[in-house]
Image (cartoon, rainbow, N blue to C red; front, side):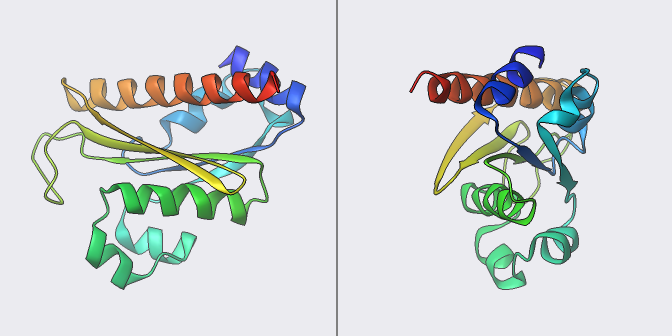
Amino acid sequence: MDELIKFLKKLGWKLASCESVTGGDFASQLTDVSGASEVYAGGFVSYTNDAKMSMLGISEEFLSEFGAVSQETVKMMATHARELLSCDIAIAFSGNAGPNASSNQPVGRVYTAIALYDDCFVYQDDFVGTRKEIKRLTVESGMHRLLKLVIKESMR
């Protein structure tokens, strides 16, 4: 996270987050690092569909059509978080950490989206492990992808 904060500072960018499956773990780990307040605007923990609708403005019809755990929904989460907090970049997580399959998705299926201006990159992972391990792997892979994208942008 230190390196991510360093590159965000270098670019002068603000970051937002929107978490479902991770329940705020990403924001917690990011804000454990001194200097995070210079680049992190804040985030949303939209764990339920009701929260996704009320906090992010995602419609009930959209969630009914695509489901809470989907590429489409996580893309909408990241895009709305970036817009609502007026940030340059945002990351969002939605998935099923188990122990039971839900939303027609297997345990370990996680979608991560990174919204950068008008682009949005979506990733699908199928992690194996306990609920806690899946959440940890989700945050780690999200941070790695975010860092890789920010470093690439800083080289332009």
